[in-house]
Every structure is written in structure tokens, then in C-alpha cells.
Length: 152
Image 1: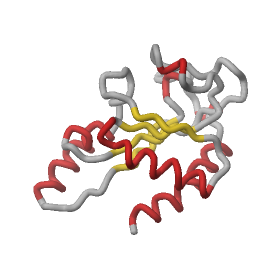
Image 2: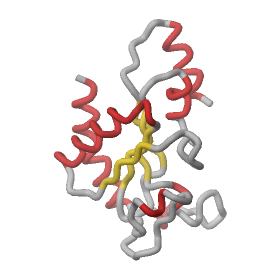
Image 3: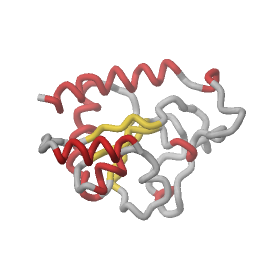
Image 4: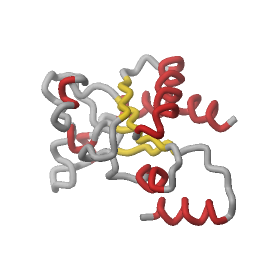
């Protein structure tokens, strides 16, 4: 995994890593109820409609999760959910933020929740026309000032 090598090498060079914001699957948005699934127990706490972006972090990244969510809401009206989830929950560590967590660094995944919403995930039917480009643009537009603020 490239992120693992990046973090390992950056730490060897004594680089200061303040955190990672990993954009992972941000293209699937739906207005219909029942388009959002979650692992057991989490489904009691979050929406059943897949029309939001999620900022997901482990317990050690909770401050970064809150910070990003708060700043995003200041710059965008796009629906956002914050999730601080223990690492043993299925799917939370399936992307590049995992490497940062393993090195004790804060990291979040900004996601449409991937296979919990995209029922074509990693199938032949997962094609570009199923992406919601307007929603993706709104997510990116909301994140740009957040990233700029965090980089200061």
C-alpha cells in the first residue's frame, strides 16, 4: 500500500505529519430512502438515505473528524455526517487512512460510504454514468477551504 510506504518514509525523514484527509469513494449519492446501509449497530445512528458525505475516523482521530466536519459546515450546505468508529468495525480501515492510524497519526476518510451505498462496487456494472458529478463537485468545493485552513 503506497500510503504505508509514504508514512514510514516521511517519519524516517522526521517530517511533521499533522494528519491525513483521504478522499475515498465520493461519487454515489441518492435521494431515495433505503439507499444507505451500515454495519450492524451503526445503522441505528445514521441516515437510511445515501445523500450525504461522511467524515470517518478512528478514536484517536476524533479531534480531526470534528474539526473537518465543523469547518465543512461553515463552507457548504451539503449534508455531512461525522463518524468516530472503533477500528474493529467492518470497512473503516479499508483505505489509505489505515496506514496513518497504524503509525499513531490522525487520519480521516471522507467517503460516500463505498459498498454500503454503491451496490455496483467492484462489479462490471460499476461504470462512470452512475456517478453523481454535481454532488462530487459540491463535496470538493466544500472541502477546499477546509484543507486550506488545516494546512495553515
